[in-house]
Image 1: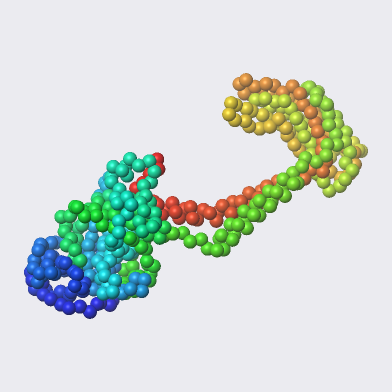
Image 2: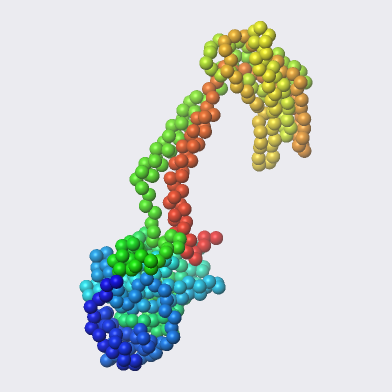
Length: 423
């Protein structure tokens, strides 16, 4: 662990030796041994005393040095905060940082993440968002700051629970503050109001591993992040983007091919429309090999079903196939189910055939249903089966959508900590 070079002095309350790390604009120094608040601008006169404070857990401590975006900083102060809302408790730790070239900033540890914040001199537009405005807003509020738009994320009232080290202002355990956090694309904007003062801070998420390593935090003390930080923007790999495009194009092409091949073929034989109780014998001839033959049964069932038994014989009177088929059709005011047509597809070699339909039944099993009274048989040849093309198109489409699930899930987790609800 590295430490900064510092001048030293003795605490005017307990006499303990203390390091002055924070430069000439430090206002107060809270002794790490006795909790005395010393006025750094007036010979370290005692201003207040904070005793028996519970030290918060943090991987950083006063005197540690490291780099953030190529700028060297020293940890000069520690301040813990707490927020209560609806029976829940949130805690985090702020560390005051000092750089001889870049001044003062904050390093915050919350939910296992380390963030960096700097106070800003400009104001947002609007300058603040009141509690009543947020509660009554129909849409998620937003502000403009530095030419960027920041959308509401969370707000609340907070109170400090621990103070130690040097600060460029005078903190107090008796103070409380109200904050509003707003989320931009790469930064968050915090609007903090305490008493009559209003301050603006821009919060960034540095590389976690690089930051902890730079401050020489031992690996065993690295915090463990919980969930996804709101500033963790999802970065999809070029391969995933390429794969998504390929899958969607493949799905569209497959659908197009399926539509081109989904013709019903050529009708080669058709019976008359006959009564449901009559048997039908329908001859037909297949002249081309290699294509499917489709046998379609139509019946005027309505909120009912009809049952048919079929036998197919070849030109020698030998059985080729036997099958049973049911026509079911149900319809309500805003729904329908089933169909008045049922189809059977066969691969038949060239030759003459005879189809026999017999033992037909018609049953009403739904209130207000109408018993089927008529049916008709149609035989078509040259039908293309496109079932596997539809399945393939769906699979390609699902694979394409899967490439979009990652960003959606990630962004949902990013916003999980927001207290805004669109309901």
